[in-house]
Length: 419
Image (cartoon, one colour):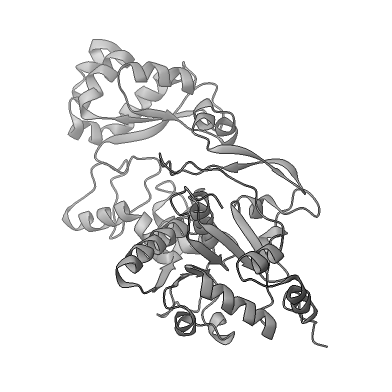
């Protein structure tokens, strides 16, 4: 591993699977950590999920597991447990997202792990945490969005609750976990001791909907004037594309009227006159219905109708150019196709071409954190068990003969099925 990265010298033993944990470990791998993905001989379930190329690792797996090495270990085998113990001894972080009690039943609960290596940070992702009435419930992305408050506050006012396309339950939790891991590593520099770090998906979704909790408490003191619909109960309602902030905002449809032909516009108080003059001249500038932010809030439906009528003459890019000239905050609704071919995205290295021995050329998202002294080089995801012998020999010091003996003992193979 390159030695001049921000997290060079940090070794992570990553037992997580699917999305939340792998998101966290991949980000740390981007920043230079040596991430060892420990898989059962069967492999991460996502290797085979939603395959677009037969017999090749799926994009679901490859896009979440770059910058990692893969080792397969059978943790139900005594020799496999021996290898696992040695890895715990030499790693800084152990990550897992098994159901509650799984590692304890294997003999590797937090107390045991901490005894093996007092300096290790053990990081766990759970759906609802390791304690509480919901602790044993299973969680998936959309379940976390439902129970964390995101779904109830997303969608149109009079429509059903909807999930967001951003994976705030899984990837959002992964980012929270990374913050907890890095904080624990910094604290270890002072104390010399590792600690247990836990993130629950439900908790993290609640944290990501914090402005909705702001509004929940504001309701005790009266209606929320910035909302397009002024009908309230005792909970934060769905607000469609309302901005959710102190300024009015909405998505305005442009020509030719396709599913993503919209421009999101934020109408700040100090830019209204310039916007009104561009859209309707002096007549609109002097229209008493829109004289200040308070009356614009009350009449925002009519304001958006006027802006939509104006926008119908332009594409979203043309309208963005017009509004940028008068300093109106705005941005086109970008489809995945728009982003894949966007010059800005390419300049920021946020959609990166990679090569894979099974699937050939494909693209991975880049690293959103840009560090001046720690440039990111993205490497492809590992094949199942690709680095097993490399890790055993280079990190744990096993000799070739010993590795052969471990293979013979079943340390890396799937246990036989019971009859």
